[in-house]
Image 1 (cartoon, rainbow, N blue to C red):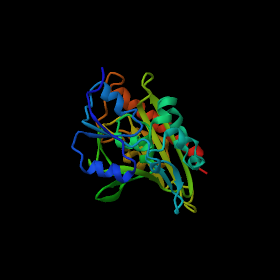
Image 2 (cartoon, rainbow, N blue to C red):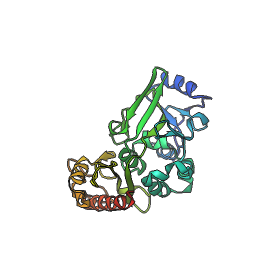
Image 3 (cartoon, rainbow, N blue to C red):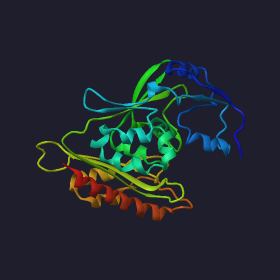
Image 4 (cartoon, one colour):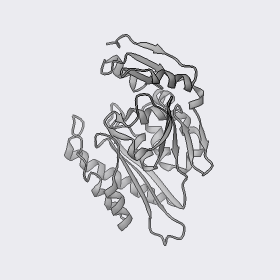
Amino acid sequence: MTSLAFDYRRPDSVDQALALLAEADPGTKVLAGGHSLLPIMKTRLAQPGRLIDIGHLGELRGVHRLGDGGLSIGALTTYSRLLANPAITVYGLLADVLPTIGDVQVRNRGTIGGAVAHVDPAADLPACLLALDAEVVVRSARGGRTIALTSFFEGAFNSVLLPDELITEIRLPAASGDYGSAYRAQEQPASGYALAGAAVVIGRSTGGGGRFDRAAIGITGVGECPYRASAVEQEFLSSGDPAAAAHATDGVLVASDIHADREYRTALIRVQVRRALEAAIERVG
C-alpha cells in the first residue's frame, strides 16, 4: 500500500517552517527523520494533507553545554549523533538506551525531537528523558515556551504541543552530587519496541549522610504513554531498597495486547525497574 497524495513543503529556515505551521490546517504534519511518520502514511493510518519537511534544517541540530552545566540537544539531532557526543557520558542511562533503539538506519535518521513529539507508548527514549527531568523548548510564530517533559505527554501519540508549534530543543539539567542512572527493558524481538522499560536516575547530595535524596523513574511500554512512577520514587527514597519496584504500576491501567497480557506486563516492569535501580546504585559515585 502507498500513501495518499499530499502537498509537500520544504522550508529553508525555522522561521519559514513556523510561518507554514501558522497557516496550516489540522491535516498538516511535520517531517523530521521520517521513521515514525512515513510507515504509518504508507499503511494509511495517517493521511496528512500537507507535509512540512524540516529534516535538512541544520540550525536544529547539535549538542551544546549550557551555562549551568546542563545539556542542550537540538530537536533534529539523531540518535547516533547524540550517542557519539562525549557530553552524554555523565548520563549513563542514555549510553544504555541509544545503542538499542531500532537499527543502524533508524539511529542514523531518527531524531530526538521526533521521538518526543511522536509520543509512542513503547518508545525507549521518552522514559529516559522523563527520568532526567528534561524540558522541551518549542516555538511558534506567536513566540516560544519551555515545557517540563513531566507535563508534556497526554496520551498515546498525543501531547500538549499545539498545531502551530515546533520542538526546537530538549534541555537536560546538569548532574550534581553523587549521581547514577540506568535503563533496562524487555524488547519485543520483531519490532525492538519495549514491552516494558524502566529509566532510573538516583542521587545523593554532598553531605547527605549517604541517603538517597533524589529518585526519578520513567516507565515506557506499560501505560498509554510514558510516565513517572512516583510511588516507586517515594518508596525508594524512604527505604533505599530496589524492592520499591513493586509499586511500578500503582495507579496505572497496564496495557494488554498480543505481545503481553496485563498480568505478564505488570510482572515484567517490576523486574525491569528493580534491575535499573540496582544498576543505577552501582553507578553512584
